[in-house]
Length: 468
Image (cartoon, rainbow, N blue to C red):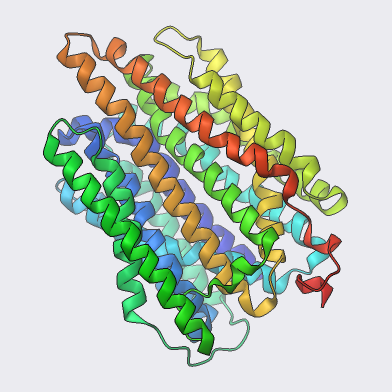
């Protein structure tokens, strides 16, 4: 279990780093003199890099030892944090974020794959709940910490706080990380990596171009989307060919499990809504509602703390009662809160925002634990690494798409309002409402699917690991 706790420490550092950025982006936009649609790439590029790296983790976890993969991932994250802290401008800061993401993209599948191999099926919900407790501490601390730091210091201090924690996690891994499982000489297909990069990158970059003030931006957006879709189609074809001889970069046979596929679709919908909202909400709070960075962080704090505290409870409920008891009400809560956000304006009371964010957090706590456990638990053991890679890839791409889509909607309406002579608050309110409405409508897909996910241990037809 020591290995799992080491991985949890690393995950905590990575998520703490990411949750501080949501609050920091409005400050960075001002300090660096960049528009919101450019600033959001500090988040989108991070998630996109993860989406490109994560498909390779199925190969990496087979080819290299747990210790080697952990040290490489934490070294990349630590180096990226140092680059961000010392960055003289936007371009170098973006490069640092990409390096950070390279490490984070390896770390999350490593944690999930290791847990599936170490923890017995009957205890996975409980362990996933404990993971939720530890990992939710980062979102609880991150926004408030970022708000306090940004009100008193420069944005560089955020990376200066994360850096020593990352160094300690790396040192702990060097000393205590052990190897699990056996390695094998798995080949890596360079063409698959190239197609993955063009596919996922082109798709999300294309989305980010819509809403630009120039016609050229929209043309580039359409071209990027076409390139992305074609590249993804070729990527899928390439994997289907290679998996016949077990050489696929990402083995798509994981999607033969109906339970896994539905769970992944739900995770993608929730990730799109959640990541997009978490990036857009601070911009609304600071630009429209007129709150400072610390106040924005405090509004996010109660929900994040409650989400963490409920993690172990949700895990025990999942082990005892299965998926529907949690997923159906959980997804409804997320969707209802997003529809409320679609009604907010310049003068919405802060306590109503706290309640709405708390409802979303509780709904996500009720959704993520059963989805993680049910999805990977639906696969045979030799597909755990590929299932984890596919799940995390799709989650990150959906999150990046959510950030790009909602930010573009908000920014385009904000620019139009400012050109019409409106103040920033009045110009931004309609854009925020429309963006949140889009997230709310998309979230209805997760509500519709919530009743169809089953707990793998309940299935005895041989599809699941427990049913051999």
